[in-house]
Structures are given as C-alpha cells and as structure tokens.
Image 1 (cartoon, helix red, strand yellow):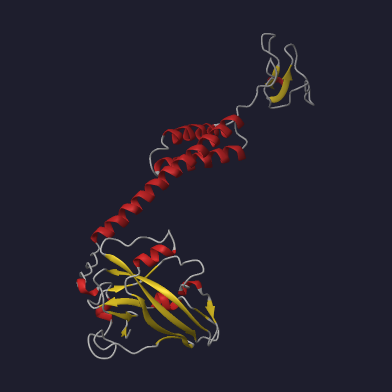
Image 2 (cartoon, one colour):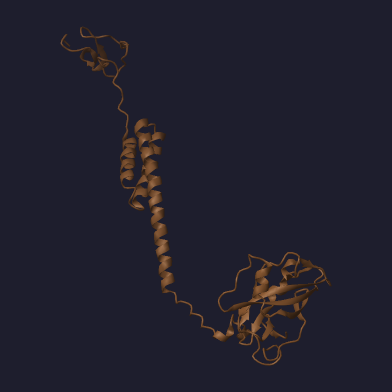
Length: 306
C-alpha cells in the first residue's frame, strides 16, 4: 500500500489477506500491532472523541403527547379519562425504561391532571344519567290513588274507627273510668269530669302567654284524675294525649297547650311519672267550636261517657 492510504486495519496482501495494521507507511508483522484505542476489527477512533450513542426516547415523547391531548380532551366524558389513563401508563413506562426524564415526568403530570379532570366530568355525567333514569321510572310508575276526602262530620277521622252503634259508639258510650292497657298490663286509669264548658276568660287570666282562641272557638276545661297502674311507672300526662273531646257532631279535638296559673289549679301536664297506685288530679284544656255543648271522650277506638 502507498502512503496515500490512511492508517488502519487492512487485509495484508503479502500475508495471504491476514488482517494486519497499516500505520500509513508500513505493515506491522504478527502478532498484530494494536495502537492505543484500537483493536482488530474496530474502526478508527473518531477525530473528536467517541460519538455519544443515540438513546431511544419514543415512550417519553408519546407520554408527553398523549398527556397534552388528554388535557385538551378532558371535557369529553369517558374519552378524556381513557386517554389520560393511557398517558399515565406511558409516563410510568418511560420512567422505568430510564428514558428522557423531563419528557417522562411532564407527560406523567399532564396525564395525571387530565385523569382527575376527566374523572370528575365522567362522574358528573354518570350521576346525571342515573338521576334522569330514576326520574323516568318515577314518571312511568303509576301514582298512588289520592285518599278519598273524609266526611266533614268525621272531624279528625274518628267516625270510621269508632263503632257506629252499640257499646262504645257516640250514642252508647262506654262507662268510665277509662283504662289504658299496654303489653305489661294496665298503664293507668283515668276518671274525667267537666270543669268549665266555656273557660276562655279563665285561661286568658291564668297567663298572658296563653294563645287566644280563633274566631268561633272557645276553651273547655276538664278535670282528670289519673291513677298509675304500671309497676315501672307511667306519665300522668299520657291521659291528656290519649283522650280527646268529641262533640255531638262527632268531630274530635285534641288537648290544647296552655300555661297554668302560678299557685293556682294544677294542669295534668305538670305532673311527672306516677308509681303504681299513685293518684293525681289535674286540668286539661281543649279548643272547640263556640256552639258545642254535648261532649263525649274519645280515644280513636271508642267513645266514653262523660
């Protein structure tokens, strides 16, 4: 070879094509001469140092692109969340493969934000669909029949529950005392009598905070004597809530809340728990029509003599 041939490894024609080193001026005999930085079969060193290997960054770039796309598509239900999930997976894979860290992390962050945003949008759409479906079912479901209007003479509806004739009816009320029974036996007994069939002025004088009757109404006061019958005790005020006042028209009126006179006539609600056999007497007020005069007691099952 001539001097115009650059130094390097070549097949030596004088050695049967054996790979020998040509230094630009002469062949080197076997064993092969190995210049610094070279080896048989290797190319010559790069004049500016070894070339850096090109790293593969495809997954990291894909994570960034998909994350950015998911962020823009986050308002699209289901689609945005699905793309964001794919971008999150790509970002994680890129980090595991040690690809470009900045691209991988940025793609992962964009995908994470898009995943949260897309998830919220998708959840809102699902809730709207479920609500709409429920409303549709409710609209298609047959509505319950409206309750029939009660006879005005029923008052609060005691008429259909109490017997129309015979013992316990308004015409044939049951005798007193009224006996309330529970699962353990007799809770209490109550004896009731009329105290004042028009006590409007009296109730107003007891306390300034007592509500005035409405137009066409008056206060009626009855006296109840209650005897406890439950070994575990019973509230004296139960009788006031269990017994209502029924007029001759069979309209029924429950007790009215009033305040008593300090040091005056006790109200039945002023008493607490009664022991078995304990006996107390107190007054109960009812608001009834002004023209009402004939009364019976009622417990929504039967009428009782006054």
